[in-house]
Image (cartoon, rainbow, N blue to C red; front, top):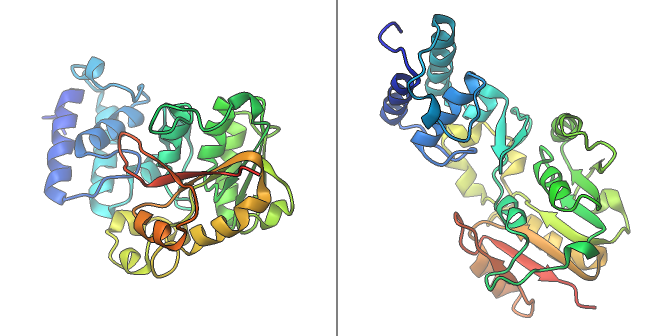
Length: 294
């Protein structure tokens, strides 16, 4: 510990140790460098956006121990950094997380931040017409919170089958002072909201095939299995959403659903649906939009 003094030292050390341990990334960060930086900055209560201004800062002995302890815990337990730190970020917005929920990382967050534009730059819907929103499989409540930032006048319902996940979502709603703006419901998909209709439905359901979950590395096995698995091909819940969504969309309303790499399956099964595939910087055709025209 006495040989490591600056943040630059700890960043280099963490990257080397993480690479040697062959850690798997993808829980809020997508590379070993980004994860090492996140762990160091968050542990030291520094802004997580950019580590460069702090690289030459010398750490106190107590701070060195804190950072080393987190680095070692990440290696020895293979627990995602977000769980170790009880924190992750989406588009700069902080969220509390623990093992009761999947670590937030939905491409729908990118699509919301981009203004709900299709690949041609056209808006999927007029923001002023969005007065109520439904967030299915809300988990930590991250998409509901982000949606409230982009649609501040809309009322939002958020559902989840896991009571534990909803307990985490409540923490995030309280942190962001959104308890009066977002209503949480316990139950499967649309069941808790009965016959209500919405202008926008967001869905980031489980979409991993059973065989894929069995081959998960330890980092992904640390997350709730029910947040990942959805039948043999990963699309059972997506199929249910497609069946039931029309009854819950207002005329002109839009469903936005993340499905991973199952585009070819969905298009083969639903050839008559006018699916609009939405790309992000990190994804290609893993999210679709579907509008209700009548």
